[in-house]
Length: 483
Image (cartoon, rainbow, N blue to C red; front, top):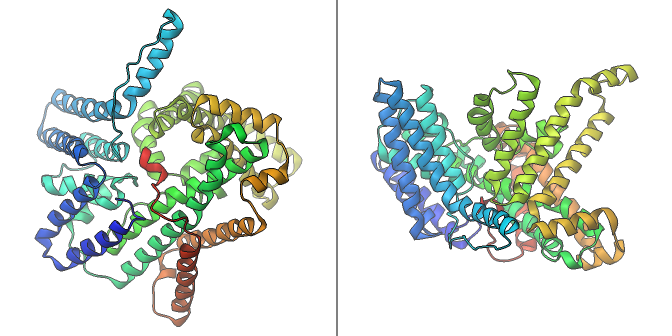
């Protein structure tokens, strides 16, 4: 079941109505059943995996909390890591490793074998696995108490708005809210509907529309041109942002209508002035998870310079591998690691050069150049992320740097007419306005003044009209469902 499907448009109002009408003691069971139904709509056979992960992490946390022996606690945390990551590895990475091993064996022996299995990637497995791991690790560290109510904990793992593609919630934020009985609050509904509307607009009216151009290049590499690759890489950056942040906005909005506040996952990342800042604004729930559970345990920046740079690279390689079981994703992560290491190495020399030239650190023109430079670096890296294979990647990079072809013919072949370009420009402007409004705070979405009501009504009219006019038709899958 996807957010942008007719099935969900029936499912969500029914669940929300029951949530507010049922007695407090029954709401968690209703939400748990609804969440499992939401997940079962994808593939009923895979429900056993999330139940297994939930059960293992729940039991381990209870034992860790009661145990006095450090050996028992370490055994439990190891069992949890091996079990949960083992399931994730098998279903998501086994075929990737088997293909890689087969390729290497072929280089050595001259004979390649097919060691892959016919596996189905469970939707959302990377998200709920990391969510369960954060819970058990926090209990092990003594930062959180183990939840005794199994059904409540199972709801924390499977809460339907953020189950499939995040944000990756922390137990300290979500579990206490799930314990509460939330009353119907008009302000929460207003904020929630705002977030849902902005998410649907990003997905339907922008991401799905840009996908037509992006797919025309990345899925038809043999007929592409260098200029087409340039346009498609820029468009894909915007597409994946609108697609993923759109999902997050809808998830946050759905939960907020029920009075539950999920964590922010995006903070206008394309206004970042460095790659470091970009990752503080992009997929915040993942980047903060990797920081807290991988980067800091490795030593973070409180170590020698070489070790610090090594830690940065490990984190970004892990991020790349988390996103997809392919070497293109690993290279994408490594490229961001190189960006960050370069920033670290050049930070002091750049600061000294700026001082010698008399350039103010916050000069507007300099900040604009930094934003543009960061966007270029991120968009270039997304070519590796989006490429379907190494062969396609090689062709795309070759075209980008050697053969631009005819710009007018490329625009025509991609359907980029004057009206389409104008539409994209207006859509991006509207998305920016929506994000700025959301960033300014919830107080702008609340209250009963005539000015606020008028502005809200006008924006709703525009958003709904554009969704109806420019929807490509049908419910397309969100990009991050594959991760």
